[in-house]
Length: 489
Image (cartoon, rainbow, N blue to C red; front, side):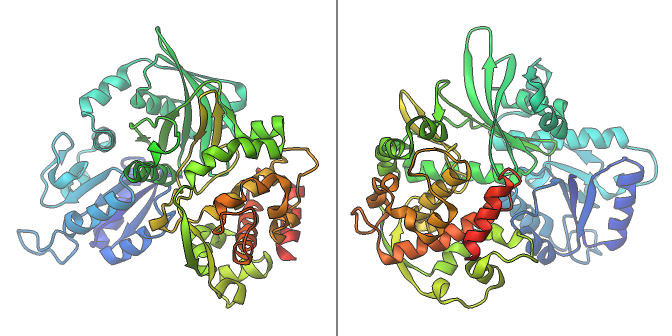
């Protein structure tokens, strides 16, 4: 369910506004209100807070405000910058007694629209005007995000677009709304008159990932589209992609062309990558070749990805609690073994609190088998939403953990060298013939064996990764039970 965020110090006005939005405007969105900036800021620093928020309303001043002029500009100087820094996709409307009427075409201070508090009076009924204001506030926000004019976006919305998909995608499309998704794709302007969803790609992020074909009268292009209501995740991927460009990583290895017109429309976010139509995933390559040959073929691409890594000293708890922060969302009444439980409860544990030497460098952050695509042109890495540079605390060994756990979860290959969850948790997998060809890329020694510190850190991280996988409904029951038994041992 989407929500409306209100930052307003006048408690009586907030109560009246909530009632007005519900009874007069028939808003079904839940309303969340904060009366002080510090209260709002604390909530805004919570990672998932903005996932379902579709609109923000803030007063200009959050102090007493008993004069004819504002006594403070906290809505402009503190609330708006905070929103723009952590949730730039959310349309933000200024609601103030210093505003006359309503404004959406020209707005003060960089807000997406502005309203007078008197506008929410009992007479007349402004229901239609409220709908238009929300519409233009959302257009203004998308125009700011993509560097386009509002008029251009209005033209795109008026341009016909056909959206086609198979019956298997009906539950997903019905959940986000066919018309809303179609409008979002119109605003993306992928260069065609028809978008065909070809295939749903498996993932655990809560987002929908589909391979799509965009058709025009003269050409056909292939895209990987990611859409859904956890818009924070899309924004994180967008920001990570920008950091990659700044750090020069796109000159070292292949990433798909990113479509720099991300759209956030009516609580749906969409980003897109263009890719080679004949690409196959690393998962498919493993199924076709087996682990050993597939890993050997990937070695040149991995070499470039992790080039320049250097030795560093870390405290495992500090790294793992940050990179596996989702562990806190696991059911509280269940044990996930000494290591994971110690991270979640912040209990002392010598294995977590003793420093180790590992290599620091580029970390993809979500290196599972579907985020590596192979074509005749080479290997392409996708989905850098959790990318970290060495300066950001990137640990390449965590990518290896993620990749090997994903191979086990999906039973990627049936060759004799396949492994169990216990092989991963114990670190025995690092001595397998399949993995040995990659060892020196993740080891400080740059030889075909891991140090004791590296093996220790691998086993700690593997327990965290497997614990999270037990929470995903896409992971079958047998795998979940095997993972739990392994991490509890």
